[in-house]
Structure formats: C-alpha cells, structure tokens
Length: 90
Image 1 (cartoon, one colour):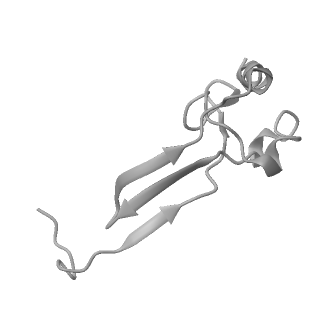
Image 2: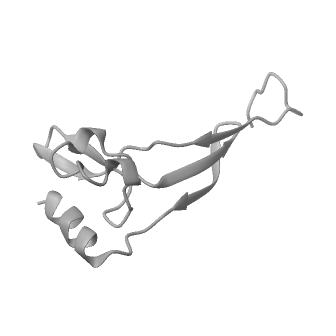
C-alpha cells in the first residue's frame, strides 16, 4: 500500500490556526476556508471583516502519518456574528 520508512512508527500532529477565509482568484472574492459556520478565534473577532486574510478559524485537525483522523470545529453560536460572517462571503 504505502512504502513507509518506518511502518511501525506513528506520528501525530495537531493542525491549528487555520485561516477563516481564503481568496479565490477565479471568483475574485474571499470564500470560507472550511465552511461558513466556523467560528473565528477571539483574537480575530474584532478585525475579521476588514482583515479577512488574517482571520483565524476556531478549528483543529488531528493528523496521523499524513492522514486526517479527527478534528474539531467550533461553530457559530452568536447570531449577530453569524450574519456578519456570512455577509463577508457576498
């Protein structure tokens, strides 16, 4: 299947600090990097609407040997923020 150098060795990695938005050259606008209901981290909350490229998502992935085996996404719970976030995708 895979030619691993160390087939009995397991490497785990937590992936953090995902971008909340990513820019689409094709559409000439920002899109949700994960999905539009992902909450932003508190440190990005005040500036995400004017500084989309630096907004960080409240999302984590657990990777083992290069494969995603788990993840957590904190979804939007604040209606006002939810509306503002979705408006940024227009």
